[in-house]
Image (cartoon, rainbow, N blue to C red; front, side, top):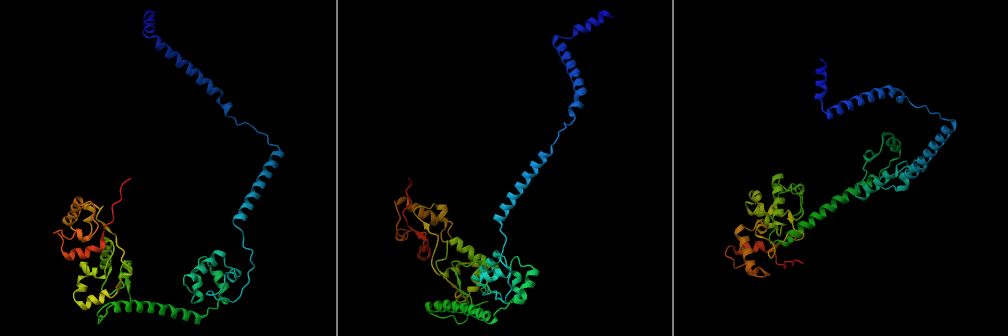
Length: 332
């Protein structure tokens, strides 16, 4: 039996004996730490004197006064005395509106609305003013006096200005054309600037719905801008409306170009892929221009391009407004 015990002891190496000893030390240390841990967790007791509480209260009061002073400086209160009087919201100045109890930002909004041409036609329109509460509206209602005669005159002047502008545009179109269309089919008396008209404005013309309006805007973007009203004939979606001369004149009479502003095709710098994106150029035509530029040092006039066999005379004429022969900038 004794020999067996000695054999087991000799089976452990020196490193294993050190590990056993380390585990024993850790176990003893853990038991000792658990023995003293409750005493360490006891909360310490602090004694607060009355003078400390007084100093803390004074500090808090000082900070509160600083915050209140900063708040009053940043957001001052209105000290204007309220004085109710009869007023016209279309003509009353800012001082009258402030003394009626409106906030300064409300007065500013009212003046901006009037500056842009807005008018209050009846007392109920004041409810649309941002920040107008029901109690404020009921307090102001007995003092609202709107001059309806001035409103009618203002409305008539706006209508007359619109009629005059439409008539002037129509007269300028008729004066510049050889023949006056016999019949004009339209939703409204509308003359549109083809260079800037959006889809909402285009749909005001009879026969032009959402699809055709989008096609007009899309073709304008592809061209880089219209150079002539006649280019509307090239849009496939409009061809049913332009089937005969009478309907064509009726439709085209609604459009004018105040100026010709187009995105230029820089023939001395653009690559074949860039040139062929234009609706008036095919891949073969764009490549022919590019190859000609490679043989020529610089192209400076359309006459240098007219001998290309892939173009007809009519194609050169419609493409001419979009060609730009500026010298390519040299790289520094």
